[in-house]
Image 1 (cartoon, helix red, strand yellow):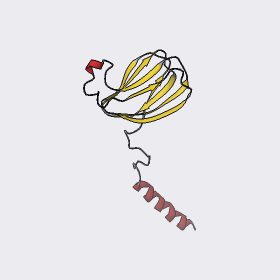
Image 2 (image 1 turned 120 degrees about the vertical axis):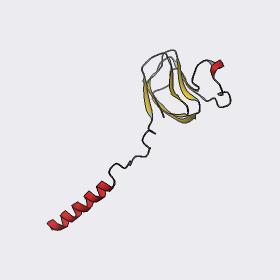
Image 3 (image 1 turned 60 degrees about the vertical axis):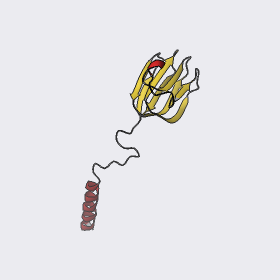
Image 4 (image 1 turned 135 degrees about the horizontal axis):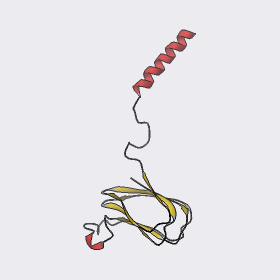
Length: 127
């Protein structure tokens, strides 16, 4: 009996070492969503340049501000080269109820977050 258990243990060690370092998650490393916490602030923030994906906005506390996500790298409309045909815009209105709002929308030029007024207490995810 001890010999059988030792053989089974040895087999499990060999199988385990064969999978060492193998990623078993559903997303490739570097494909995870990046978080940015918003705590009642007013700001314009470039979250990422180049292609990206707005994942979700998790609102935990409503507020009077509007949060917009633009497919751009600047708020200056005159400097937004090439965005007129691919412009994407997501807007979170003032006093939006608490909850998770999933978007999974692709942005080509960059992901720019523009907050006017007091932002809701929330977390934004993108990749």
